[in-house]
Image (tube, rainbow, N blue to C red; front, side):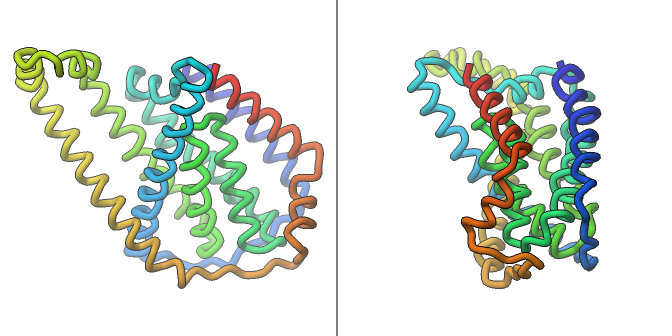
Length: 277
């Protein structure tokens, strides 16, 4: 399932699209080192933005499911929690961050930066969010994508955004999935109405439950730190104008008034619809 669903996208679709995009002239960004403290701050901000977007995505997915009278499930999370851990690690922690950062940050931003930092960041985040193809991920992917885009623009080094992306996917994807797969949540929910069954479940799964509670506490601390860092750093954000400046409506026409973008958005819309079905 991993191979059939992801390899054609990562090893065929993205390289072909990258080759097409490289026909546009790119700009070499100014390079600056990122201190370990700033990297940790950016990571915490990513975790905070990710959880906020995740809450919004789950809420909207639930509303859509109720409106459509169906259970909207997230198939990728099911693959991660029930599939082979080695595949989960390779695809979510190694392959996806490298290829997605090279494409949505390096290749895309190097060519969109002529329209200014804000436009390049929003475009990178928007296309990255739509690329995920479902309501569960679109909001947090957009937010995290914007943070990673800002990091890349300010440093000019793609390895910073790749390492941040890897860390986010490791904690929120691989590590959380590794802990969840050892918890029989259905049995836990069924046992809540039976005190004896609940006590037996707790005795049998005490170690795993303690690990998951510890993990949840660590993630909560990271979210709080990220929120504080985000609020205190907003005023220090700096956005350079681009070589080509235009009113917002004209700029939107430049970026979205072409057949390629129409096709991309159309295909993403189909993916969103399929994810509901």
